[in-house]
Image: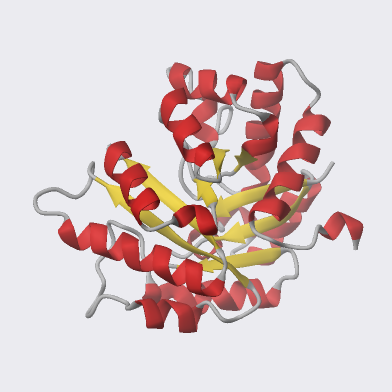
Length: 264
């Protein structure tokens, strides 16, 4: 089985269970069938480490971006800054970017402008977007439309909205990615979306070290646990997990415009 963890933060993993070695965590993931991972950047000060991890491991790709809740630690990155940082071949996406009205309040014009700059940079380098949206569905969709984000597409990461938003995002060329949230007993709406959307538009992720799925909930998350997400959704849809793994892996390489390494 070939699984992809389409969204993880390898630079932030709790490596206690792996003798402090990231390589051991990646071996543990491979033992569960996880053959590729996308290490997602959330602060530009940590970007060098994110990129270094991707450069050190053939099975890891990376993104560049500034999370909507993160402090810019100085001046906001310009479109040109992001374009320059996205040049490395291991960088396959811009983000994670988007809007978050849960953690940030007040006048959020700065957040909107940050989001728009990421979209413009993604279009300049023709790389996909990784979208974070929390309690901001209308503005997220509006800005994606206004900025022509459908030109590059991408993924709505850690999706926990309703089917209506999923359909609107898919109409803009985005994939829908499910994290460990889908396994939580109270996540009925997310489960309904995972059961109903076309398989051709689905991705799976851990968002590790956060949101460990059942039966690992409450522990530090890691890429190996994306298998639990795959198994849960396969059961929801009444299909074999191998079928789900194959389709979501195909979707990943298509979404991020990568050569399918299963064919190499």
